[in-house]
Image 1 (tube, rainbow, N blue to C red):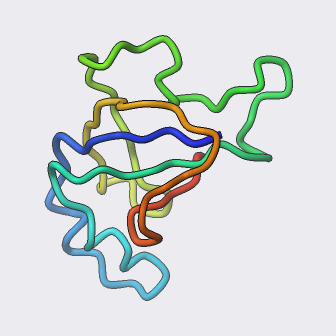
Image 2 (image 1 turned 90 degrees about the vertical axis):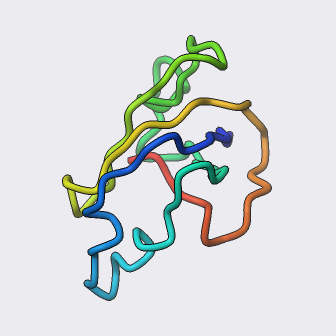
Length: 97
């Protein structure tokens, strides 16, 4: 499944990332909608959910995120909705880990 979020805040360290495999962090912006896919191996076999997907969060709850590979690139977002298929552009699509 896919979860759509709206970014609320992000640290300045995201924009400073220059390593080739992590340049995607430079494209993150406050106020953008992003899609995050929940799939193996991140999905919990018992609950069939990914940790941090905001399952029990209402639309007004602020949730925290952190980029893999650069723990200084982090921020907050709010869950918009859960979908079966992601519908965001590739540059705004991510995977739970």
